[in-house]
Amino acid sequence: MDRLITFPATDAGALGSRQRTVKAAIDCIGIGVHSGRTIRLVIRPADANHGIVFHRTDLNRLIPARYDTVCDTRMCTVVADPAMPSARVGTIEHVMAALYGVGIDNALIEVDGPEVPILDGSAGPYLFLLDCAGSVEQDAPRTVIEVRAPVRVAAGDAWAEFRPLTPLGRNAQPVLDMELSIDFAASAIGQQSCALQLTPDSFRSQIAEARTFALAPDIEQLQAAGLAQGGSLDNAIVVDGDLVLNPGGLRMENEFANHKMLDAVGDLALAGARLHGRFVAHRTGHTLNNRLLRALFASETARREPVADALSVAA
Image 1: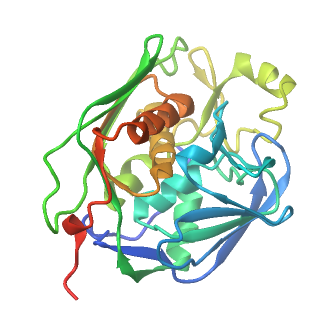
Image 2: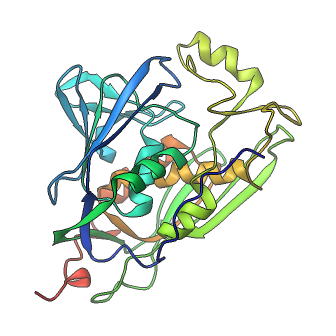
């Protein structure tokens, strides 16, 4: 087993009703898994209602982290500046999952290249950075999107769906229940599932450390397509049939399904608000996750936003 990062204990209900940002700027340097470039990333505090925004410092372009700025979902989630489509930031799902998982609503994320560093292939290092930076509450209520009716997208036998939960009442905390399953021909993966009610504690303990993975027969094809140029056994699990090629093996049971759940959290964070509803999926990935958010926002009857009265705080 690989060594796991130990995180401080948290209160599962600690998200609260106010927006939060990081207390101090913090940075890291790492390799982009697809570009192979060395990239510096800085997470900086941001004002209330700023949201999560990427700054391509080498191009001086700001790119909001939203479902409608997603321009590519091959192997990772990529956002782009609508006014300059060549200004892109890829592989954003792990840092987005970490921010959403611990309740950071506002941050400016600087990168000096085309993607976010892969680090160890999980969200664990980003949680470590966020814990080191700390967080502060801001004088603004969180925006919540409440799922009011089922929304479903599918591609072949793969599908993803939002379902409503009990309506969100005044001063209630939004809940995101999540469940997904995967099915791979490689026997080292096979059929797996993951289910959780997303809280800071469940995120940290169940899915944060789950690493991205690749099938050995696909790696040469990916590299020929200009992808996975920075991939290695240090930042991904590699599977060949019934074998896991990483010397340390797996970190946890069902690490493959847990990583798919981690990706889903990062992709759904592009809603730009806390979600109240149930997410259920089978064989989903970045493409279906983004299609699901687009379908939710396209329907005026399937959602209610913002639910300001539900999270109001007495002055």
